[in-house]
Image (tube, rainbow, N blue to C red; front, side, top):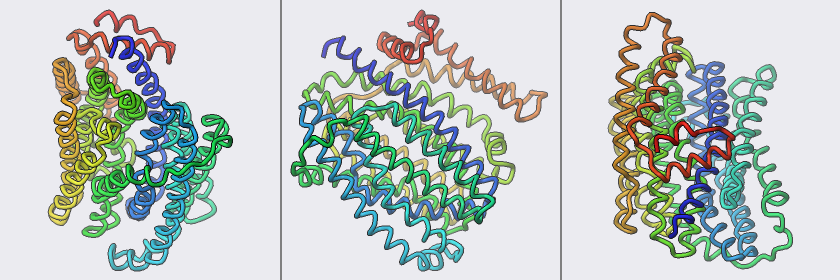
Length: 511
């Protein structure tokens, strides 16, 4: 691969990541605002009921998607590159119908079994009506994932940012606030969640047909079911096993402990999950870009793109993790209120485990784009089994801290295994020596800020805000002075300059 090809790929990833990251930041702020509003208005008990029932329903929703969300960003760019647009239309149609009807089956099962789930499994009769209403989400969730996967496959990142990250959350918050005077707050939260998914799904499919895939209606349907299902079933199992990583903690907390424990644990998980959004912003455009390399059989060109993308994940995630490590109680109190600070240890543990997800780079995307979906499945199985076993052992003894330990370790095992598979299969890894420059800068900045925190005469929330700015400044100044950037980073910075219209010449002087 030539340097111009690499520069073009880095520019594409950086531009897409900039848009998606901006959308994710805005969407995350709105999402956290929504969770804060729910947490403060509902209280730990009802907030726990909401999150427990949502976890059950989202397990069914993920099963109904059958791995198509991961398949579409690979299938669509692969066939667009070959100008096989009839196949693209057929894949979208098949995915929509398949997910919708499978979702109806799962929704019916939850509705009919809601009493048994509430009373027998979770020992809380108040959960039954919430589950019944929430079951409506399942078929809608399947369609929404098809729409998101399609948009991602076309690399239409602005719609991902504006619609799926921002628009849906605005609808959810608005409907919940309007419902406060009309219905019970818990049911208002459920209705608001359904409204956000419904509105986003309808608009998403309209955009696909009218703005993204404008010749959709002129394309013929061709048989694709066999090909896409043969590719997708390992991803479906991957999605199923990933549920054991992402949902086991809350479900088992509800089983072994109480809805209140789920309510206290959830803010820690919500805040720690903010760290995932950094890698999502890069992976969003990285997967279809890498799929194009595989369509040309250009395996040797992946490593520099892999390394640069992974390094920027590390660069951005590290200071966020260290900030959470310094101010865990303050963050929970500032966002949710003092009654949720009991989850501060869970926040620290989850943040470390999820950060490791970003430190491991974009390995899982390479496995999927390279057609190694069974290896990706193996990674999820390892992580899922780890999470189940550890949560069963640790939650009865340590409560929410045990749940955090189990989930954090499962994230780590998942990404270590994907790194090993990528290195063993393609002979590449994401790391460079200048990672140590960033790590040293982060640790040095964190030590300075922690000392300042101890002796700060200011109130706790002013201390957190002021020292947060100080920490970010120290971190990036040390990262620049230590010469942690290289020529590929300059390409990414130039793409960010063009996309945001900012002047980064000062930073580029250190490259």
